[in-house]
Amino acid sequence: MHQKENVNYLNVEYGIKSWLFTKDHKRIGVMYLIAVTLFFIVGALAALGVRLELLTPEGDLMSSDAYNRFFTMHGVIMIFLFLIPSIPAVLGNFVLPIMIGARDLAFPRINLLSWYIFIFSGIIGIIGILKGGIDTGWTFYTPYSSIYSHTPVVLVAFAAFLVGFSSILTGLNFIATVHTMRAPGLSWFRLPLFVWAMYATSLVIMLGTPVVAITLVLLILDRAVGLGIFNPTLGGDPVLFQHLFWFYSHPAVYIMILPAMGVVSEVVSAFSRKKVFGYKFIVYSSMAIAVIGFLVWGHHMYTSGQSALSGIVFSILTVLVGVPTAVKILNWTVTLYRGSVSFEAPMLYALGFMGLFIIGGLTGLFLAALGTDVHLHDTYFVVAHFHYTMVGGAIMGFLAGLHYWWPKITGRMYPEFLGKFGAIVVFVGFHLTFLPQFVAGYLGMPRRYHYYVPEFQFYNILSTAGATILGAGMILVIGYLVWSARYGEKAVSNPWRAVGLEWETASPPHPHNFEEVPRVEWDAYDYEYKYKKEGVSFA
Image (cartoon, rainbow, N blue to C red; front, side):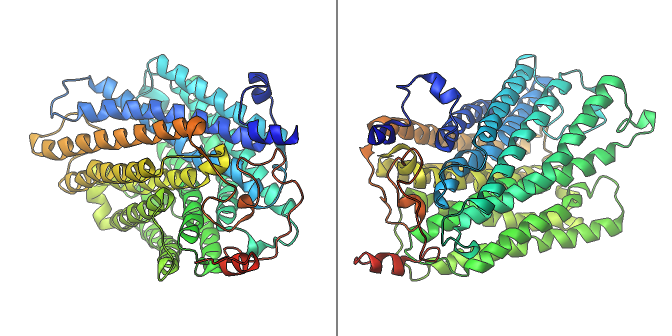
């Protein structure tokens, strides 16, 4: 019976009720995966509407008001319901307890509660969309959102407020689990770098999310009862909203990126058969990013009237936060050097992450500098930079991790050729979508408008063509992963010959992850020790 449960823990043979009331972190991770995929599809359809509108300079597909609602819907869904929860809630939920040798997360019931809050928040957001959507942009900037917008701002802002509690509960669970449930022998500096990344991310979630939650409550009260916190006609300050919003929302960048960096560390080591170079430097850089990320919010506000001195300080700090990121890129590159590198699909996505994130980081330097940001701030240069950093980084990292741990999650292998082909299509489509936007933005094309001068049409045609290729790539990925979950070749416990506790248990894992409590006797990523002990070549 134990073996039967192990084989069928993902099946619905015990009924939907067993899933809806499960406390198994693995099932909750799968339920998050289904939810974020559905939200991703809705957000992608909104992006398709935006790109189709921008094919021509005239607003011939939708009105200005409809366009505002479409790009706001795209931003709100993708950021709050996909990018932020994708890696922590899906991959973190599934593999983090297994990676540290735990039977489950520290608070299984709270873990299930966080999923219900996430789903309830998403439903409220979708209701807001069905009521016409909002036209404020995903940032909810005041005073437009608090006074002038005639859309259901309160409903969607409440959904964004509520979904923050899901993140807080997940972060709390991860911190408690890492502190109290590590396997014997698994000291802090033997932890996998993905676990360190999730730990740093959880700290950011715990410290930053309450700020944006309070900010959204104040916005709701401003709009509903005329509280006047952000309303200048009542003595309020709309710039205060920006300070509060970006104090959370720039660290939220690292809520999306730090987990992806943790995934890349795992994948680069596994497919180069080497210890991660400078393990402790990557650990410290993750924690440094978590700290410095709270000190750079003002670079979003160079054109909002803050003092020149504040701008200089934020500019220096923004450049400084790039240093620990550069440390990671350097260490991954050195890890690959003279490694036994193989190019399976997870590795292609990890390399794609490095390429896209480097471009996103380097173009961020132009926005960190006061002089160039004034010119570029409200142009498509910012849109391209944001997507290279967030989407190119977070989504490529998510896909790398999803392909890497897919055999462990489902017990099935996906078609390797389609995995590699999908990675290439997504990479090419992404570049063709957003590289032209750097040029258009540099030349002065403003963002958030669906009317533009004809000189920019060529770049928008390229972007829409690239978005079509990118969308086809994502459909391909979703298609073969769904197919493989049922019909794929059965996976062995360690198909990648990787090092880590998650590869010491069956695929899919036992109901309580391990038949016996594991004991860790090797350092993280010590391929030589692991395979010499087993009497096989690790090269």
